[in-house]
Amino acid sequence: MLNPMNKNDLRLYFIYGSGNGNVQRSLDVIEQALQSGITLFQMREKGDGALAGKALKEFALTVKDMAALHDVPFIINDDVELAMAVQADGIHLGQDDMRPGALPDYFDNKIVGLSVRDGAELAASDLGNVDYIGTGPIFPTLSKDDAGEATGVSGLKSMRDKIGELPMVAIGGITENNYHECIENGADGIAVISAISEADDVPRTIRNFLE
Image (cartoon, rainbow, N blue to C red; front, side):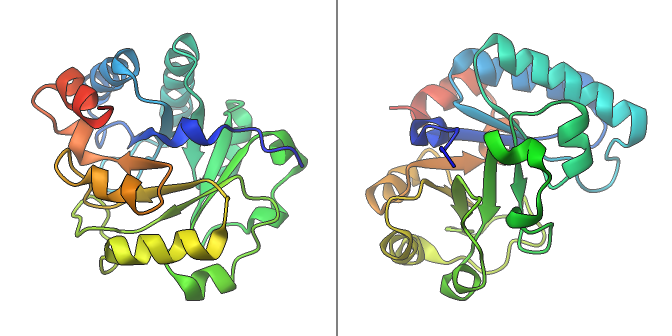
């Protein structure tokens, strides 16, 4: 299968949802992020106040259209049915989600990402249908309550050594002050949630990340 993504798409990967139902603020943040240069967007709708049903689909379609205007790929986290319903550019799966090889044919020419924390998870993962992996948390994080203990940049470097040229994005506790360490240790890019969603100045934060 031809890889439908360019590893440069991972350079600054923003993950966000409706902000636990605060849709208008969320859309404002996402629009600022798209205008300022993020290279990939993943819609991750989790936790208290998360949208569901028709509201979730409408939100996804709105964000997909916004991303398309900026030529930024639009990825859905976990939800295979939603990704197909809104014709997303791809999906990101965790170790407890559908296995990449079991995805419907729709995803054959879409971007498929997989979370792989360490060597043990890598050994248990079939990467045949995977276009990139996300690894971490590299640094301690509060954005994902199921993230687990930080692997450090040594874990990142180890993963790069194991996977060869497969595109890889680092996630977890990444800030403007430490992202360089991720790039220097083998990541093709960084994935962030709160560093952008909670930034006082979203455009300035993104400029700093892209330096």
